[in-house]
Length: 144
Image 1 (cartoon, one colour):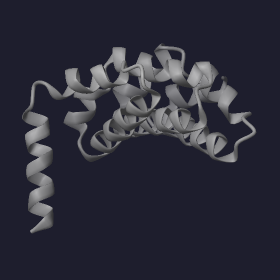
Image 2 (cartoon, rainbow, N blue to C red):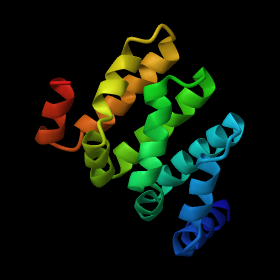
Image 3 (cartoon, helix red, strand yellow):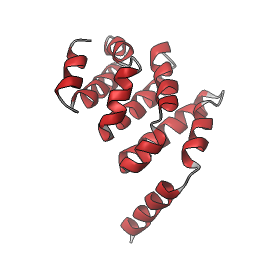
């Protein structure tokens, strides 16, 4: 019974033409707690469905999320951003390629040097998710 409800919810989200716009608005909210919640929700949706990942992992959303990683946001916001980048990259080869094209490797590698072991681990998971999509992406990760 629960599985049916979950599948129905995912199907409804996939069919919605406003999910992406609504979540993007939340990513741009001035309150870090709203941004964090939006990133976690997006990451969970991306992990459930390639169709949702394609709707949510737009260039704009990836760029906004990556800026949080590059600027070194507060740890909770940074971890949420890394979670979203991980789920986007692990679910979609196109998103992984887009992240590389947006320059994600340098800030991710900087986060591998973080003092916080959780942030360090999350950054490594992101890099691994990108590298898993074939030799060309793996080569770019290794060379970064």
